[in-house]
Image (cartoon, rainbow, N blue to C red; front, side, top):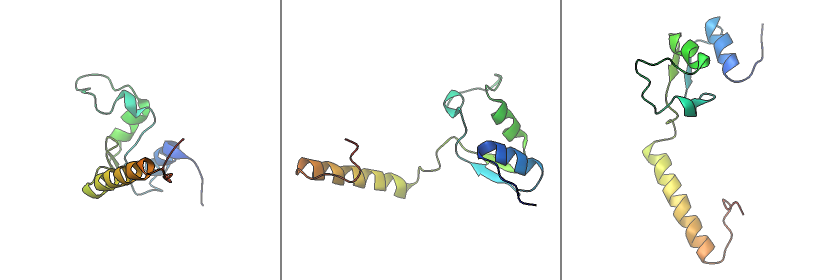
Length: 97
């Protein structure tokens, strides 16, 4: 029977019941409070993180999935192209204001 849900509740529900074989997550709600900090020998500040870490069918990464050579090169190329466009009096499609 199909079911719908959103976000990490869906992952919690689906992986816990084995309706989802597994999940790989690169971002979590409130991650700014625990990713990129040394929390060794400290209580984890997120019940969601604690629960997901206990699941054998869940892989967590600290929000670095975008960090590939191609992605970084694209960010540099697009940024530099946009600077040249703006300096030449043109409007960039990425320009915010």
